Image (tube, rainbow, N blue to C red; front, side, top):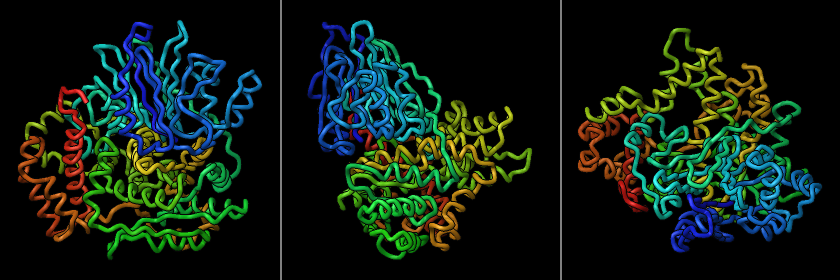
Length: 605
């Protein structure tokens, strides 16, 4: 697991300029939190390739960028884990390749030499890979990410000079010389309508993200050509519990300490139970589990459920209690690490939780992310299935994704911004259109919503957040539900078994406490409505970010209506109003972060 970056210019011949060392060090420094163990940058005429390494597999080997003596001119860097690297190494060794260590990424130059840009089709894991081919007549940069988008790559292509730059994190990308960008005009509407940027967009003009399961080919001077690969083939055997057990055991093996995140819900509970079972059967030390709460008495606490799961699984349980007075600083740090606004308050909890994981000496953490998307766990999915024919189920689905429903958004916008969004179209409009188009060509609603959730929302909203905020503390988050065998198995189930997570409840019947199986679904998050109350430090932060002077200067929302929304919430606390206020505040803070990274409109980072 690492942080990677690089650049590729139009001229890569001997006469081209070599990138200056100082800016490359600045790029590395902005994401070094995710790779504290080793730092290396190589550069040449018109190119650079760098890595900040978090040593997980073969910590003493695996120096990046990867190079093999018998393949001069082929360089590679990897962020992530390749779980089938042992089998691939045997195949490549049989073809004459030799490797200096057993690190998973060391085989990448050889795999590329054998298969060219199609090399990623052979990888099973979570990964973002960059391969630079500098051999005469073959010069190109190839970027690839895993099928679910667990490991992101952010791109910037300059059409004026033909250069392409990439990095694991947006703040690092902005440190490259020549990267000129500006906030997207529709970024506020996107945050309110969908809580974060979907598709290949980010909140910044000029910065894109490689979509899940994609490979980008970059030739000198040309824009990246992106294509989708076919999914990695997996042949799961057994029922849901068997498939998940196999993946948990596979991901629980590491050369560094492994723990589990236990929210108190079904998904993380299953992962916890199976990981603890694996530890006992292999005579390993007891599994450590982590759960986050906030000091004081807050509604919807899951701590008791998490303790129940830990007792049943016989883990060493850590209950991490965060002081609410820290929320303001947590908010600033999470927005900066994410590089773009994400309106889910779970971000703060995620950041604080992985901090505790690292402080207790763990480098790998197993999580339950991805289960709801694959096994129909969201209320909005059930509502879509239950909606009668002829109703606007797609519009209701889009509203359920929002931080502020359409009517509230349009009420808050200035007339100028409302007209702009009506003319350009909202992210919510695109979601509705995708869902309606899927139904129009004969897809059932469960297939349509699952495809949307896994292809777009899961990677942008959940996986990118988990990646950035775990790596903020140099922790590798591994997600059994996102592995190809589990994905294939889930998609093969009859609709009834993957609606309302029925298959997962059946899998957990003998593994989890009955109280956890009976409890209503609840997201692991911040008690936002309760914390936006008079006297709360969070309220002071939100009030400052939503001051009339700031909002009038932005020109997108009516300050008087935002103040009325805040007053309404304080009089009658509401989760929905609190979420809208939070999203507005996060976007305002993000604009400050953009300025702090020295990227005002039209200026270089």
